[in-house]
Image (cartoon, rainbow, N blue to C red; front, side, top):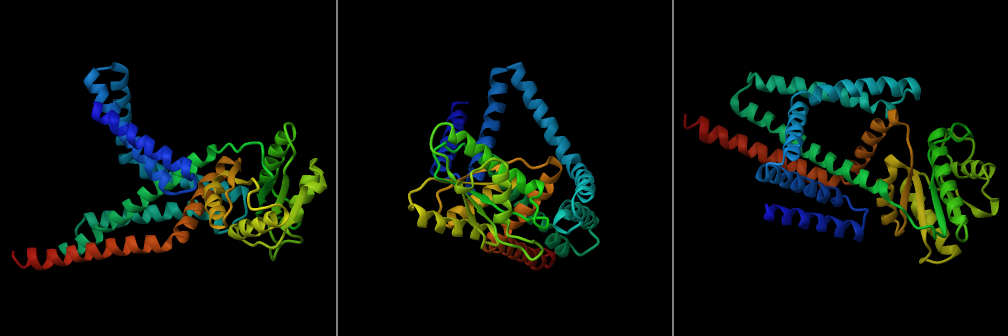
Amino acid sequence: MFFLLGLTLITLLIFITSYLKDSRKLINGFLFNIFLFSAMITTIDIAFETQNRFLILLVIAFVIIILLVLTFGIYALILALLINAKIVLKRESRTRANSLTFFLAIGLILYLIFSTIISKKIFPNEINMFLGGSSVIVFYYLFDIFNFLMISFLYQFNRPKLNQDFIIVLGSGLIGDRVPPLLASRINKAIEFYNKQKLITNPPKIIFSGGQGPDEKISEALAMQRYAVKNGIPFEDTILEDKSINTLQNMIFSKQIINNLISQNSASIFVTNNFHLFRAGIYAKKAGLKSQGIGSKTALYFLPNAMIREYIAFVVMYKKRHAIIVSSLVIINLILSIIYHFFVISYL
């Protein structure tokens, strides 16, 4: 018991050290999950060593939940994704970007069909072995998704000090020249922080960052500035960055403005929607900004679709790592299938 307690404390300290050093690292999600797993094992051990009824009931409830998830989880997930897809497509525009929950549900259905075909063993044994190895790739991505979701959740708890020189508001699409609700929530969050800081010290300058898309009448930066001024922000406390077309450029161009106005040592934060917060933090790091982010709320029905989009963006961001790992798994599985064919089948 004491060994497991010590191990849990060590994993917690490792996570805290890494997170405090730089909260914008994907590995922090993995480290926190290691701590959670260690804490779970420790709790189970303490429950049965001390015969504490509450802990034993807690462990039993946890085991039941795990069994239910393993047995029915994928079916419940498919149903939930299809329901969510219907809601999103009803309330939002019918685009591929808004249909990700539907596509994921179809993908899971195809995976179930694929798994059923493999279980029937209608192919030669070595082919079945090779196809069955695809489950390892699925588990790899499930593991990666779990780490991604955990660090995305943890990063929501940033509480920047009220001593900022700049607030960078990241743009998103306009409807003509109008600020839609998703973008309005970001501006409102920046206004909230601005007003809180104004009560105790000098208010920050707000940099509105976003260029003009092909279907937009004006730049996102100008539309955001107009919205903020209309909602009480003094015009002289606003700055336009209207050249960027993606998040990385938002950060790079905003940093150039900050450096030109003050210095590299100025304090700044950025504002975006909560689902986009962690990825934006990584881009801020790439741009050389020390800025941490604060997230505005997103409608609950839109979150699953948004998080899927975020994870896809992360896979693209780290495509070399994923390509190396997946290729390695495929090669290892192919080698094992060949070994099975020549050494087992031939022997028989």
